[in-house]
Structure formats: structure tokens, C-alpha cells
Image (cartoon, rainbow, N blue to C red; front, side, top):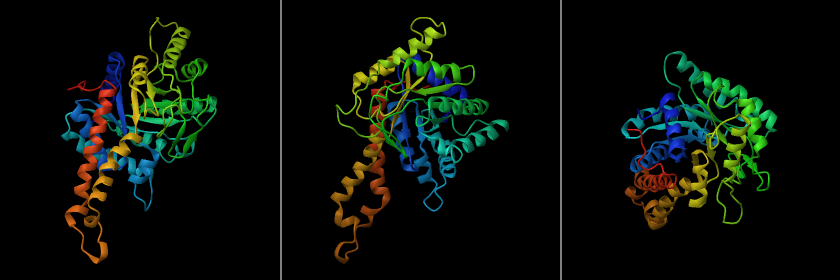
Length: 343
């Protein structure tokens, strides 16, 4: 069962939360990066999450039409076939989708999965993200309610981002300031609007100083202990027992985080951590190394013919896959998911 069924995906998330570990969610933009992610999970004996952003899906759709739905569907279908060769279970997820792209991305993909489920099949994707962090919380949650109902009907888990993550990703950007911290009131309003599972399961990307992209130490102050306050505040509001964790949290903007920051986040209910910037570099770095080392071979310099074996994409592509796979395995170790695969 390389691609998780809805039931297995729920089990994966439950196991992560109970075991205080999280799954790396790896952004992919090609069949090569998909294979690199799968290889990294397999070598770490960890299940995981493969995700495609709007920009990644547009790239996958080809630069002639740049169709996001086509790109996402094509890679998902490919993943259902190629993942059979890896001895781990993965879930397919779509990453950040702002309001202006819902009609061209998440809503059509939800419809495709709804048709599959109606025909007795599993959904194409196991979860989709609605990024309403640029909207008011009221508008964000209103759209979240609509999408959660559609997702639940298609046996899909929704991910919501209720407050901003700093930095920029696929055209959605936020300043690095004091607004990067979700409050208990924000969390209570989320629970009031989306429920705590009875309206459909969702993942919550809360903000505790997270920033997308690369940043130097000191540029941002992460406060993963804030997640405990959110869990306890909502738990108390709904009469849950002390120590309960009503939310399944997602850690965005995790590049450069310390081991202690990650550990604190895991203890407070993080079950998914996005990884993109670091894996992009891990994929590209071996390619740059190959090109610099074999400059005369990959280019037909001064009228020469070059060296076919050196500019063959398979040559440097294998190094790129290995580099990214290694970084994925490292992420599994950091998130304590190594050796936790279902089968």
C-alpha cells in the first residue's frame, strides 16, 4: 500500500501524534525529485508525505500551458505507479493555495477525488492545503468551512493556515514581525468554525515565528512552546482533560530550525513538517558540482564536441537524486520518524 488510503493516512497521523514524531512533507517539482523523496523515505525506513505547491504544479504542467491541475494530476498518477517499488507508505498532499488560486487548483482537484470516491475508488490526493493567511480570520475560516465539507465528502484531510508564516512562497509573502504568532483566541475561533474532527479532519498550520526560505540565526524568533498554549487553551474551552492535544499541527518554514526547537514542536502536537528550501539546495548542489568539475565536457567550448556522457541528464540527475534523498533521510532522523514505517 505505497500510497496511503484515507484510513491509513489517518492512522499515520495518529501514530505520529502518539509517538511524538512527525512526517517530513517534501515538496516535489518533477519525477526526479519525487523519486528522490521516495528514496530518502525508504532509506530511512520512514513513511512520509509528498506535496506539490501551486508553483510546482504549474511547472509540472509544462511551460506551454502552465496548467496547475494537469501538473498535479499527472504527478499524482505517476506517484501511484512508481511508489509501488518503494517499501514505505506515502500520502500525497497539495501545498499552499491562496484564495485567488482555489478555483484553478484545490477546488478542481477536490472534484476529481469526489468523482473517484463516488466510483468506489480512493481519492487522488490524501490532503489539500487552504492558505488563507492573507485574508481576515473570519474570511479564512468561512472558506475553510466550505472546503472542509468538500474534503470530508471526498475522504480527504484539509490543512489550514490561520495566521501568517513569514517570508515568501509561491507568491504569498508576509513580513517578519510580531504578527507571526497565533493566539489562543485565534485557535478557539478556528475550533468554533471548523470543529474538532466532527466536521471532518484537518491539520492546522499555526504560526510561532515561522519563516519560509533561508534565514540566518537571529532573524526570527521561533516559539514552539506557544503550541502548548494553543492546545491547552482550546482543550480547556471544550472541557478536555489536562494534557490533551486537540490539534494536529503542521510546522511550516522549518529550514534552519534547531534540534531543540523541533523537539519542542513535536512534543506539542506537530505531526507534519514541510521541507522545501533545504531539499531544493540538496538536489541542485551536486548538479552545480558536476557542471563546474566537467565544464569542458558539458559545454561545446571553442568548437569542440564536449563529452556526451558528462552532459547526459542521467549522469548529473543521479547525483541530484542521491543528494536530495540524503537530506530527506536526515529530516526523518530530525523528526524522529526513522524506522517507524507501517510495514
